[in-house]
Length: 221
Image 1 (tube, rainbow, N blue to C red):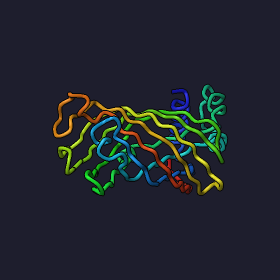
Image 2: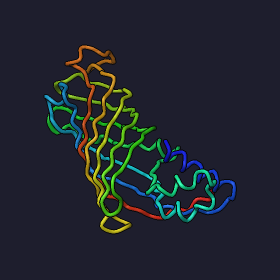
Image 3: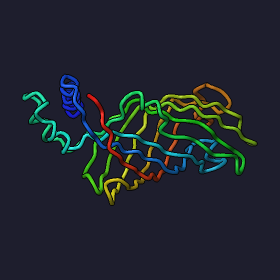
């Protein structure tokens, strides 16, 4: 919360002066393997596939230091202790974080989207190596069709936790790998009921690998 407060103060100060601020924007995209475990979906087919996406503006220490005179004095020392803040401003949170693109290669296929409208996290290290943890609220809408399982439109909110290791060998390009577990209000296959739990989807795990591309973005704050 302290980081968010300091960032808000920085942005509000920029708004008052109506000046340009340039920050790096990090776009991540790559393949993901999804595991609907434990559930009848996993029993039928262990892995389903798709994409993992991310988009973050990075307010780094250099930007904070450059703009320190625009931060009110009472918040300046706090802001100067920050290494960086990463955020996905609205309406970019409406971009799906996960895309299920898993045609039926055995018995079951899945297509759908996961959105993460709100998240909070922390990171250790910085470029070139950074490890991060975050938790967030997710909403998944996916259609499951199968030769053996009931066709299901899965629509549920949930909570997710994610661990990610990012490596940036150069400032403009890098990669990351990680795992995310999302825990949902259970939904029975073939319906929208919560029970029986052994016939429900309530957890989706995602192992992912992303390529990261960074470019400068100038905002008129």
